[in-house]
Length: 262
Image (cartoon, rainbow, N blue to C red; front, side, top):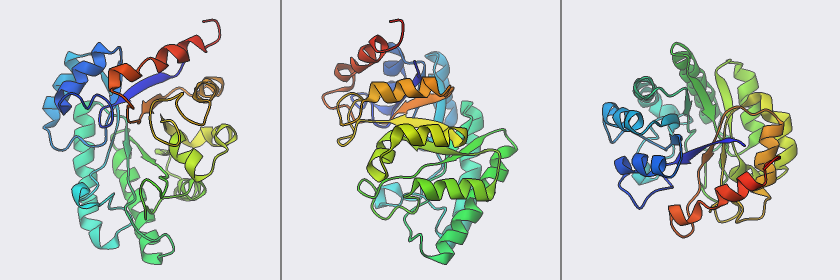
């Protein structure tokens, strides 16, 4: 059975952010992820993780002005200095929180724009070089245009091209099953083909982004396939509970019962 990490940006929103760590631990999670930690001192979050026996497996680099609609800085050549500063900020938090992987968001830009493409490649290379000094992996995630219109990195094929062209050993693919199904489909075969490049997996049911087992995919079979492929990382639960976080967690029992030998 894959190791599961509760996404505290989308789950446990019935609690204030800092109280979500305790709520996740009480719900038998031992790992968490979230989008951004930067509104809180790293020491405050680290204390919550330690107090509740949780491992932080992922968060994102600063995205720019999120509330104003910005979704990353990497593909924005005019924001180069701000991007470089954001890498330093993220790495500082990652070291304090014991995080081994960071998600680098591309931003909203036209992939046909040569300046945006050059800026993105340069930004990813810069982040990988900086992160390598701390044994931290950078992951990049294709995101579908229905959820995030205009997002620069909107293709798994393009993400793979970037990873292979840059060739940094600490650059990996963040494979979100929800985004993959919407963008391209062919989840099972693509997991097999891309497993050597995958650094993190996330899941939500398609199309409404609720709990696994509530959408069009056989999520139990998909998660079982990760086991068959010897995926050793965490699966981030980046879904929006349909009727409350705790009420929706019964899907985990269904997943356990679907495992061989259960």
